[in-house]
Image (cartoon, rainbow, N blue to C red; front, side, top):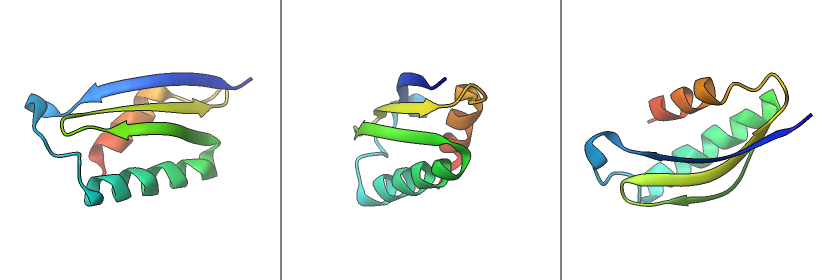
Length: 74
């Protein structure tokens, strides 16, 4: 069974660091690597200090662990 999530999270101290080409590329690259682990990212919006996106995974998908990995991407 596939589980679909709508995720929103903010940057630390709401710093405006996401609305740029580098952050967008890092998000896309991380999302593409997820395909190797049966994780798919759908529509997303990068705002200056937060992000909204859809992500889906199989029954073994751990959303918390995936988001922690995303937050570490540079």
